[in-house]
Length: 254
Image (cartoon, rainbow, N blue to C red; front, side, top):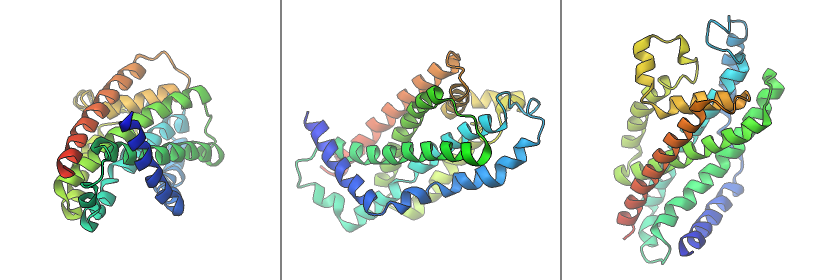
């Protein structure tokens, strides 16, 4: 009960900071909108069946775009924590009775809340701008996948920030990790057109399952086995990363 109360206290404070400057919530939407407006039209005139777009160009591209936003929108949240460490915020937390795990969960829930809002806005704008056909039931379930990714990536980012305590070290590390993960997830183009060795590597990437599950859900294929496979993998990954990052918070604030 104390964990829930403390998490709510931290979450309320963090959301208050976000609502004071809501423009940043929309700024984070600019990059996926660039892809939607400047890259999406290139796909609409391509032979979609040969490209692996069996659901249609936008119905395949936009779910991948949402997953990409979930990955990158929360993975860089740790930069804000480094600033708090430098300002002595973490140091002052040592004298408070707030649960150390709540310090992580409150921040991560703030990141997830803004992420889910951004994902819904992006999908609605895709319907208006690119003529995307929205499956509302699938969209609701897809947001659960977004939530799991957001929780895991946010926790990982805070844990790395506590470990490195330096923007100069964290930025290249995240870029080195995310680039191969992004390319092996099939976000931009489905991996059905990839050579066998590339598809084999993608089997070890949980985000490839997330992209495939999002596409299936978004297009109403609710019984596709990749959905529960993605859910299980992402839930396990999120739990592992929260556990690891929670230990970092405990050691840094003990």
